[in-house]
Length: 130
Image (cartoon, rainbow, N blue to C red):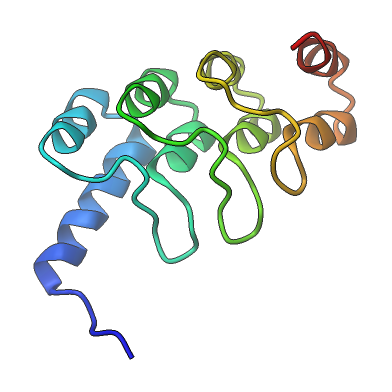
């Protein structure tokens, strides 16, 4: 049985996840540069990258991947940041993730499956060209 984290650790993690959600790139990057893990996950398995991608913050996505965030890391439901960006229609985030090497076929449903579900032929063409 594991111990519950210290309240200060929970408070810091909550703050960093909120920075990712809001796309506060400079502050987020400063925390990562100070030692916060780039692949930090919350209780649902969402990474900082997943939250930044889902909320449409391409600069934060770029900052995270440049500091080691895994663009294909799925959450507890099997969703990847790229699939989330496709679902939300975030073109700049999709581009940033693909530039970072994100795999359109990773996850369940994958970004490719998500694009197919929503009839996004342009994305299917883009993914097929990779």
